[in-house]
Length: 444
Image 1: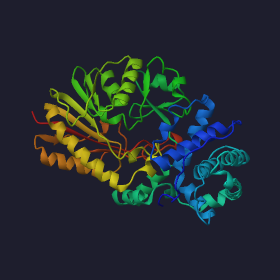
Image 2: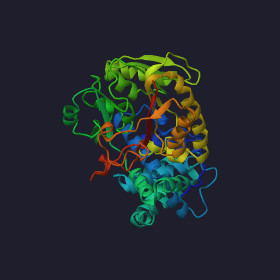
Image 3: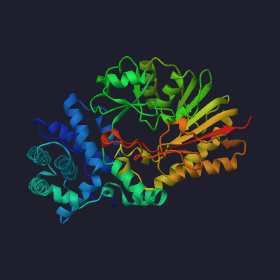
């Protein structure tokens, strides 16, 4: 399944009727992804809606991108002549309305009516409001049959699904694709008393020590946020820092550190942390998080390819990557990446890894990780690094390092989590991000 060939247009606003503002924001967010290669989350940064409408807009936009392959295929089948040219935001209007009809607990009539209002409120789309009405009513009338005709992999770009089938096998690729269709739970890393916080928040403690809850509202409203008792961090993202073991009193560098989950982990464990990132804006968020959590770290704005420092006892490099392991949380990634992106980012990773060798003390540890499912960004990078750096040896990951998660350690001793791991009867409470990590020690 390839990205449906609908060109996105500039967004527009509509009349201020109840529920319309949320739909308009969701439509703009989807247009930003499809037409401008913007990150889905960026559309909500400056939104002025109340919490309820903002939450609804996020939900609609998220489902629209999570099920974009299915929705795009259905719309393509119903639009015999394709998406009309010069129709403004019509594409995004149809996508977000179809998402509501097919996948959300929203009255179909309301979804259709508000979509038509959005079309009528735009100079470019108003001529196609009748078409929007007709197409969406067809989807409403035949939703069960339309959905039954499409397999789970319909929501994964074909080039990506083929890669996963080749790397992991057809069954695992299908399981990954299915896991990414479900909006995930909220995972938290806590400073102390994970069991107590799981009880307070109505969640559970995972084998890795993270607290998992089904909460899908504003994070700031949860008990313990303002008091700095925990921070949001996917269970898989919390594993690489665990590979360092006891870091109390050690000098640790967290490279490409923002937004700071790993920095918080090692700081809470008693390390003297230096957090480095090239983005001052992202480091500002890291600094704010550390202040809320009452944790300390030296924060440095720098390009790590040029940054110099005295060698550290341990270094974590959470390298820039294609982020294909995070599609369950960031569904727009599936449709904003291409195979070319993987090659480009793999070259950057190679250069960063080469730079890390001099930043680790003799006898110290280097943990390299990415939130990618692609071997070029994981296993192949480490094989190349070890071949060119004979003073480093692989220190295999052990089951007790990661809470005994079944299937998360490769035969070579790498950490490789998949979205289909951590099964649960409730799909929302299952899964984790796709991560790769390797632990290497520099010879003394």
